[in-house]
Length: 315
Image 1 (spheres, rainbow, N blue to C red):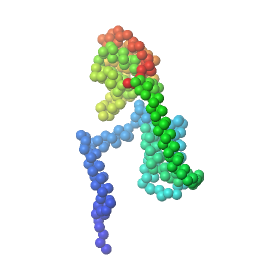
Image 2: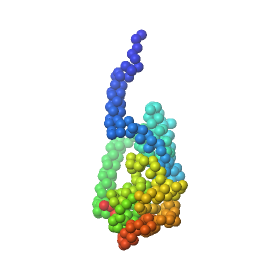
Image 3: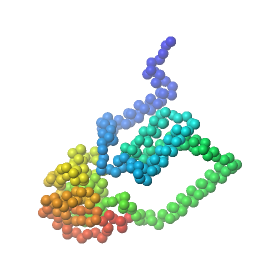
C-alpha cells in the first residue's frame, strides 16, 4: 500500500555504495584547475577532425591491422551469437561500442582487443568446446601447465640473454621514426635562434633538441597550448592548400623546416623572399632572404650522420 520514493529506493541496499562511488568519482574529476570546463574541452578535442595524425584516422580494413580487426570481430560475434552462456546486455552494449571505435580512429584497436578478451572470451570458449569437446586425460592438465610454465621461463631467459649485449646501443626503426636528424643537428651546431615553421610531426622533436632558442609553430600538444588559428595556419602550411603561406607572411617567422613528403617543399622553393640553405633526402631548411641566419647555417659543416639518423642508436 505504501511505497518508497524512487530516490529512497536508489539509496538502499547495494545501490547505496554504487551511488557514493559515482559521486566521489565525479567530485574527483572536477578537482582540476579548469573545473567543469575541462569536460567541455575533452569533448571538443575528441570530436574534431585530426587529418595530420595517422592514428586518429579510421582503420584500413585492407591491411594487416584491418585483417586482425576482422578476425577478432568475427570470433567475438560468433561467440556472442552461438554461446549458451547468459549474455549481459550492458556488457554486450559496451563491446558493441568498442567494436565501432577502430572504424572511427585506429588508435582504439588495443581497446577493442581488450574488450574482445574480457567481454567475449567466455562465449568464444563455450562455442569452441561445443565444436571441439576437450578429451579428459588424467593428469594431462597439470603436466601441460608445468611444461608451459617451464617453456615460457626458458624462452624469457634466452631472449633476455640475447638482448643484454645490445642494451648499450638499441638501433631505432627509422621507417617509423622519420625525423630530420641531420637537419636538426646542423641547426644546433649553428646555434641559430628564432621562430620556426615546422610540421606537426616534428614539432616536439625540434623543441627537445633546439629549444628554447628555437620556438616552433606547432607540436603534439595541440589544443593544450595552441589556439585554433595557429593550428589552422600550420595545417594549411603543411598541405600547401589555400593561404598556405600565411604563417610565412608574419615577420616573426624566421625560418622553416620542411618535409619533402609534402607539396609545401616545392612551394617554398618558389616563394619570393625565402632561401633554401640546406637540403637532404628528407627535409630542407629555409630562411628569410638576407637574414643573418642564412650565413650562420651555411658556414657550418654538414654533420657526418645520415639524414634520418639511421646510423645512430638509443640511448
